[in-house]
Image 1: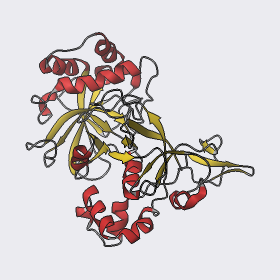
Image 2: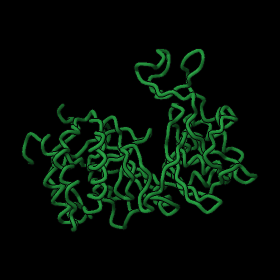
Image 3: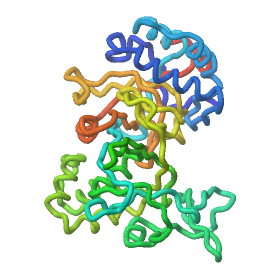
Image 4: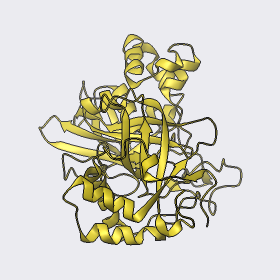
Length: 368
């Protein structure tokens, strides 16, 4: 498999801000993937970055740990060649942000805590090209197993109106339906339980329906200008219009089911699609059909100042994905956990240039 024509070879000198980055922090994230793939490899994305070509870099990352940012930078320069990734349309790519919410929760339903987070139902079936009914939209990766065969699963509105009541799927209860919705969007959360304990829930499965963002719905309705859609503006609109929360949220038919996960390191996020804990400010979600997990990306977004006043130019590692992350030059930056991270993630929507670091074994010509 050859590299996609969307890739244009560059030099490290072409990468804005490369010399000033903290490559040691990026190496730590990369090393987590290096240990995971020794047990289970990642799938090669369709843009041609062959997973097998990472093996020399992964082997060195497992065996030694740089103690200085310059040594870490030399590691990436030794094993990789940068390629600018062109978007399918437009002059530049796009970055948004995500985070791990932290909210109060109760282990039992109470008058205050009455919004459930649900575990995976027993009748939810994984679908693929082998078992998906011919008449069903091929987008569906999940369906409902019934006596009459497989069909579409209940959507958000049906579930929140009681389609799964009595199934004992409740992992925890929240006080706010909007908080629950944003946990669905982010795919994980830390739960500060009323008994003082800290729990984490993370993605287990979904209903299978397409995701429709609340911000897009509100923009289409003329409630919030598209350019002003942020997590903060959406929350403010819901607070002002509590009687319309269900109307808007039920337009997103996708519903997320969760499982419990450990909080082994408070400085790291949840284990995500690449099966390693996310690193705040260093893990990025990408289109997993196009890209190969574990790929380092130098991302340059000069107008993005949420992480620092001098713009964004960082080496990130592809360690997650999302239904809204579609395209070759599209990324979702993991900002961390808690409210402060949410304030950062909620306002990120910026043009960005993406540079994939491609293993040198895949590069047939010298840099030019």
